[in-house]
Length: 115
View 1: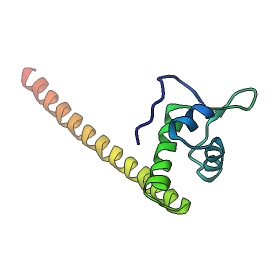
View 2: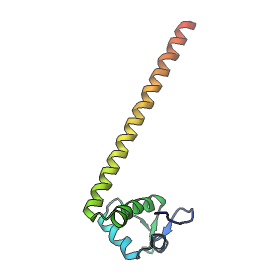
View 3: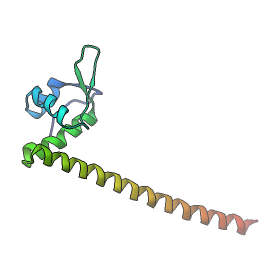
């Protein structure tokens, strides 16, 4: 589902609800059900959603509304997705470290050959 929101730091609950064609009550309900969805609140208590919050809501919306998962099923999928992202970041970091160590070794060899 493609959402149409302008580029800005914060979105009001009505803007997010309109973009997804849902009621604001659904956003509030899912906020209680999915702990990873936690918009900031201004001094008046109005919810302010960041781009990250909107991305999380979009994932939940995809699993529940488009794929037909139950809330528990969507929660499980979100946990799996979070875990796999962390694993892939860890693997990527390990690859970068390995490359940097090879570069360091090569530079040390070059330094020794010059001395």
